Amino acid sequence: MKKTISLKNRIGQHTEILIFTLITLINLLFFVSYKFFPTLDGAAHLSNANIINQIVVHHNELFRQFFMINPEPVPNWTSHMFLAILNLIMPAFLAEKLLLILLLAGMPFAFRNLMQTIAPGKIWCSYLIFPFTHSMFFFFGFYNFCIASLFFLITLNYWLRNEASLFSVRKIIVLTLLLLVTYFSHILIFGFLGLLLGQRILTVALYDLMQPGSKFLEIGRRLLQKLFALLIASGVQLFLVIYFFYSRPSTQLVTYIPKKELLQYIYQIRPLISMNQEIEGRFTRILFFLFLLMTLAGVIVWIIRYIRNAERVSLTELQRLDSGHNPRINIWWLTGSLVMGFTLFLFVPDAYGTASYTNLRIAYLLFMLLILWFSLFRLPAWLGIFSAAVAVYVNFSLIMFYLPPIRENNKIAMACNKAADKIAPNSLVLPIYCMDSWFHGHFVDYLSIDKPVLMVYNYECEMGYFPVKWNEKTKPNYHLGNSANPSNYINFELIKGHPSLKLDYVFILGNYDPNKDWFFTTLHRILKEEFIRVYTSDFCSLYQNRNP
Image (cartoon, rainbow, N blue to C red; front, side, top):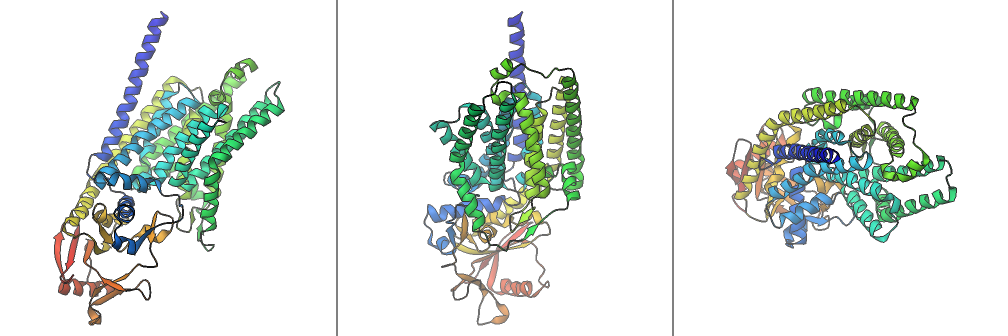
């Protein structure tokens, strides 16, 4: 009889993991079915990965005149390095697809493994992660944040599985590497992860102190060992964090979001809304009410069991539980983590200088912790299955809404990328954006993701916290037209005293109004008299200088 039950369990487990894998694959296919998955910043990251290769690998002197590798160890390197390395052996669009696959497949399985560490057997909770695999940060092309989110889950899982025996050279090296990748992906997630691990150490120590017969010195020794291991593994990163903020200008603009609006973010599950708040909100609010139902059900079940003494466990039984699998420790730790995270969410500034979306980033992490928290409650099986089904429904409902704009944006991206065929290598291109949608602002960069095409506008270089920045010592200025004819001349003098180079191409995304202002009136005359249109599509046009 036992063998029959065991066989049925194994078949059930295999079937369930196949279902989870199938949903992951279907989820993934929606985003990699087209040549490009255009995002707000994705094209800029691809373009700058190409710039890194032009500077470091190909030693391109023209690019070295304009750009340099940022000497500061900024926390935005991971996706750029990943794309730059892959772009040496494959086209940029394939490199980006591999990154998307890593994120869309890695996130659900990393979350599932972490959930199994915290609450073994609570498989149904893992399905709640699917809507969070394509958050607003994913659609905005904030790839470094997405990679950091993945390593947040991996590092947290590694700590929980090894915290009882972490003080060894091999494990500290692994932990150091995981924390380094997290830092060089996103500084906020690294900081949040550090707070979470620190709170974990203190929670375990306090819990151990509360047990009958606890030994203060032994508990203190384990506490210091864990803190020391964490300090060793994160020491370099902590120094980099201090240096990062110390080196920022002291006059940064700090902005806060009203508390009422922040609470609306929670109600709407705002980190999942990428394009249309009204339409996407219909589905994300379903998820909110599901989370509310699970919270109420979990708390009620916990109270009932507590009253009936069903949650009491003998000291001998507790000692047999590894701390990473101890439900009591985990419920208090995750509850404290949610309180800590929610406090940060309410009181930290949303923007500090050019860094923004801080509250939404914290909210995103909070919702993942909330799902982990749900897995610790002894909820009825039917509620678990219902919750998983609702999450999958919300996930694919959102994707169905996203498909038309993904299709349309892919057409725009392909048109921009196709224009690069008409551009000679090592040419200077002035990109001009004339579309109404803010989402397409960096699509011009699809022109320069594979060829040595130098775009004279680069927003990442302006920021100071990306891998590439302007080479202020040698960067030339550039111009359109002839200085001998002032009415047909536009000089982009950005650095006084530096020579000015003639622009080889003008790339226009959208349609410009020649009567809009002085710039477009002059540009129209210059294009008409000194340039020839060599490429046009429904979305963009490319003009080549007649006299290069």
